[in-house]
Image (cartoon, rainbow over all chains, first blue to last red; front, side):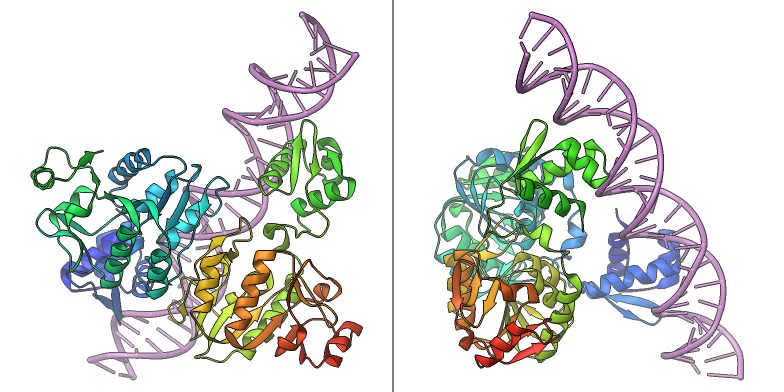
Length: 248
Length: 248
DNA sequence: CGTGATTGAACATCAGTGATGTTCGAAACT
DNA sequence: AGTTTCGAACATCACTGATGTTCAATCACG
């Protein structure tokens, strides 16, 4: 686990912590801790005060992208590989924001298809590809996450029809359907789902226990769910609800 | 001058050149030349054949972005500084693609304004800024240049009204007006100009002698031209045509 | 079909960059 | 005023990316 993540979790759990304590906890020097706190403060994770920092992470909000990106990478890669296998050359795909979908993007780099990513991270991962046709939606990128949102994004999606939408999410269950932390994100996901004939959800196992604030869509609107949970209650709940679940 | 640029020009001037000759010319090893040629071939600058490479650069087309980016940097920075000075905090600005406008983007990083760049390079330069509101237009990024073009871009521009448009171009003269190498680019520039109340052209001196294929707009639609040419005939031509010219 | 030139993969080397630690003067809190 | 905290500046170190060298495989041409 990276030191930044370690710090952010320690501060979140304690509410607030001093620089010296964090230095002792991580084994790094106080100067390094200060630099880390500066970074985390810029990301909105916490707030500095003289001698320490207090957490700004609300329960029910999402930790910033930079802290999630190297989390659970193995599972994400395996899920992404399966998703990429479900996509055929020549298809047009709209690709959601989030770290799992970013892994999918990396795998599509040399494929011959049309892709519209909903996050600038994925756009950057694909912008050097000569093989595929890259479409960028308009919108306002949310800081850190770089997920595109707002009326421009919705307008871009409404003017196009895709073969497949690959959607990530923050929570997924048979009961509550697909949910997201951010309201704007949720409406973008909805628009993406509405613009595609086929919908694939890419969801690592940890999301299957979670339910977030904003409702996106019922599970009935998903054609397939790709996840890394194996022989799990929650997977059974989804299949019972009539969803095709593919395990990576 | 970078070795890549040196190679690309030598091959363009000779039509085709051998690896050994290029190694002698640049002082690098043949292996390095091969790697360089691979890079340039991927950019579409030239075509490899066994033992050498032949140029693919058409007269009248634009050398790829990566080769222009570190060219004339001083002049571009000075022009960009003047342009940035013409913009007020709180303004909404549409920022054209190209290396000069990219320098402008870098200077806007910590300003409090709304910016819509027309190239992903500038988007990336600004995406970490907490101060400004970044808007991304939709579109298809042209490889290398990463300039956004196409119907999505035009639609994004048509749905917005900006205070100022900062436009770069490939050619500018009193006689032919503003011109661009790429037809799609030209229509995007036109749309950007149409969506803004005030239009500033950022043009280094070398563009004032050039005229490119696609007409963008007459000089009468420009409110100001920022350039680094000092006491030049061409500048006089522009001022005679009623354009406000600011020299950096 | 053979021969010599060309290629690219693998490894060595080196410089430049980024992360970390240390020091010390300035600023802030009590 | 005294103590603590901060951050700028510099030193250090690991790592990455660029370059060169070597050598076996491949290609073109006679």
